[in-house]
Every structure is written in structure tokens, then in C-alpha cells.
Length: 139
Image 1 (cartoon, rainbow, N blue to C red):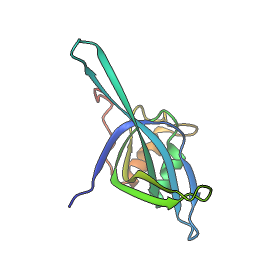
Image 2: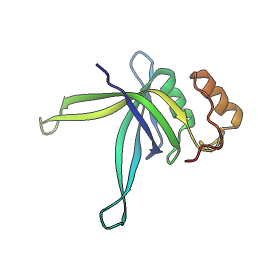
Image 3: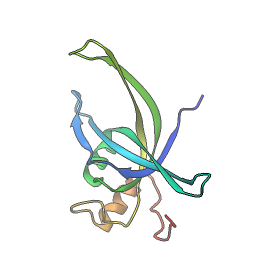
């Protein structure tokens, strides 16, 4: 069985980074993806979906350091649904999220927030085992 998700979109907010009791980093952020098409009348339409993303360990640290609201990013991961009981109402709540396992920062190098330089961008991409993207990508 396969549980794999690929998302290309923009961050809706800066990542929130916290630590587990064992000291491992956890980052959470929202991400928007859009679908564009023409309806039967020839009108351009667009639909935006929002996704909740969570990353752990070194990937969470990198997300917290380099990702900012509006930044274009590619995320590869898996879907996970958590459920819990609401303390106030006693109702069971559910949340489906993408557990990020790889990320690639897109757009111009160094546009990812304060202090991000081309050198630090390349270092992070190489550390994660990713190939730096070409500057002539058509999107």
C-alpha cells in the first residue's frame, strides 16, 4: 500500500516550531495549493485548498529557519489523521495533516526571509539530499 502526497504551493503562515518532551523539533504550518481551469462558459476559475503540514526533527528545524509566509515550497510526505476528544465539549475531533518527509524551497534563492543567503540555501538543500532547482523553471 502507498500513502504518498506531493504538494507544490505557498505557505499560509510562518512555521510554528516547538519541541517534544524528548527534545525533538516539531514544525507546523499551513500551505495553499490552487487549481485553475476554464468552466463551460469559458470563464477562468480557481479553487484553493488549504493543507496542514507537520515536520519533525531536522526537517522541522530547517522549516522554522528558512520558510516564511508566502514562500513557494514543494513538500513530499504522507497523510495522517489524528483524533482527540475536545476538552470543552467532549466531542471527538479529527484533523488530517501532511507529515512532511522532504521539502524543497522554490523561488529565488535567498527570498526565504531574514538572513537567508544563497550559500545557506544551497547548504540546506544539499544537507537534505536534494538537488538545487534550476533558475529557469517555468512556474
